Amino acid sequence: MDRRKKAAALKYNPKESVAPKVVAKGSGSIAEKILAVAREHNIPLKEDPQLVEVLSTIDLDREIPPELYKAVAEILVFVYRMTKKDTSALL
Image (cartoon, rainbow, N blue to C red; front, top):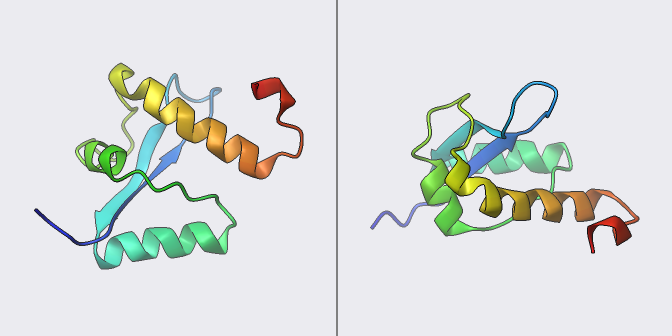
C-alpha cells in the first residue's frame, strides 16, 4: 500500500455542471502542493482517505460518478458550514 500523502480537489458550480468535477489530484509532493494552494486561498480541508483514493481514479475535469454523490455532498456540507455563519438551514 502506498503510504504517501494523497489529495484531490473538487470544483462545483451548479450553473456549469450537474456534479462536482475533479480539478486536481496527486500524491507526495503534488498532494502537498494541492494542500498548500488550498490553504493559501482559505479553502477548508477535509481529510477522508477512502474518498481521496476513489477520487484519484477519476480523470481530471470529469464529473464524479453518481455513486459518490452522497460522500461528496457530506464534504460540501462541511465546506458550507466552515465558510458560512448561519448553518441552521442545513439542520
